[in-house]
Length: 527
Image (cartoon, rainbow, N blue to C red):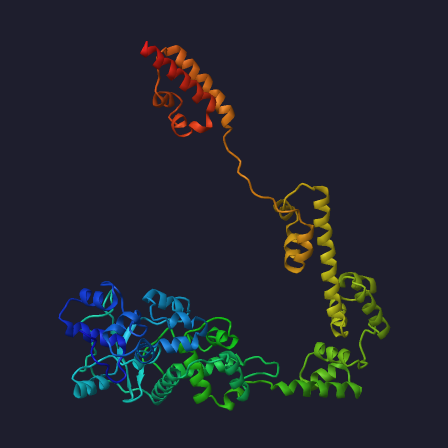
């Protein structure tokens, strides 16, 4: 018996449920025939074993995969794992691993969803209510056709299928909001586009950042205005579901929800991509970001220009600070940055003193040493260093080179003093130097370290000495008894360690004695 003919937008999971109702055999027998395993579990939207199922249909495995499962959705948003997701021979466990479902922070309880209005229409048109594939999209809770919330049904245990597990048309439907219906329409349209699109070369994170930049969602430095974005996504998601869901943002400040999407470093759940794409294309406006920026990026330049003009006009730092609403430290930094002479009290840090401080800083002196030498605070030294062009980078370079020389010397000295040491000993006694050079100069470290030594086994027992000891005891027992003793009896006298039975190859002297004694006993018996 073949699987029932596919109905419009019917999932492969639904066809298997209808097959169980029509086959007349038990669930285990039907699953054994279809999937080759009577205890197999059938996923409601990531159906596996397509190669086996295609033998009971007129469609190809590609058609089953593309139009009757949600595998294309996961393969589209997880291109790195698309080969495993599109594998016709993949089992349910292989498919779940390929779709990274266990690694996502956001996950949804696995259920089957349906629209009561659609179920009633299906009963009138086809005589049976069935599971629609688009209704099973994770995070989607609205029907775009009837403007109603979807109803969830708990899956049967173990196999997730049953002959009576089909939508119930008698359930009362509830109307959903316009935004939820709009999101359902967008999601279903996106799924149809993905099904007909072969591959995508563009990186999603670049696409999202370009969309944000066009609508004012990025600063001049290229950073995301995350407060406005998190608030907007949360307010939209609150209208898309009749009940709380772990797939949605948890709060108005859930910045982690979309940060990984914008960085593009780790795989994310397809629903997060759908939600962010829907928000950026359908809900986002320029006002959202401009209303949340205080002050605008260009305002900083106005502050600097105004500060410079007031300082050049002869006002004191305190007066300029009150005028522009900034601190005296900010005004002092701007003055040093643009080399504007200011009336400082006390008049201790002169231009000549700044040059002397900069010279010592270039030579690598510590801030505390410079501050004690000139009798000023460490903060003043740091301010002069940070406002002198190129000085910070130069001091970082000097510190790095000094650290490298010191660590190289410590490694080189230890190897010279202990030429027979191994690499583990070098790492143990010069741990900080070893790891720093391993990170920053591994080529030099490899040249200086001792040649790696091959590991060799050291016996915990000296079997030569033990052989002599056992030989002496066995000789005494043989002499005292005057009769042949079995190996088992001798071993019990030695403590029952099994030395005379399992370790004979390590006791050559003792075994030679026993063999000689046994031969003598045999010759006496023959006589």
